[in-house]
Image (cartoon, rainbow, N blue to C red):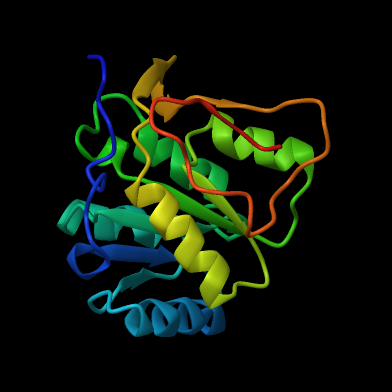
Length: 178
């Protein structure tokens, strides 16, 4: 299986079917409100990773926005479950991770387990739209890495640049966080 890209590649905002997975009802409301203002149809919601997986069994979304720190199933375990080999085509759905803790080890761990993009809280409309547009233009192929699929992400040794002006992905390039 080679050169499989995200099913959202080239989609418009109005075509997206989004699942928000977050244990904080206020954060789900904020993200849902922002998405609706972008013209995205009513996003589906799940209160944690466990209910998120149940919702994914009902219908595969085109984009998942998931918190990292949730209970009882956290973002790491949720992403690993989604990306698991044998869950095709679900395992190729892009996942934007929300986190309040942008440490280098956490970011490396999130991308290693299959996150497509990260967004550091507080969530703003500009930053969320940038990440979504980035996902819609993301043509990086998925690679099999043990028992999961993920997209390649290299972390360099220089300081992180997670600013909203970090730019759009260039076709055919491996992304870095600097």
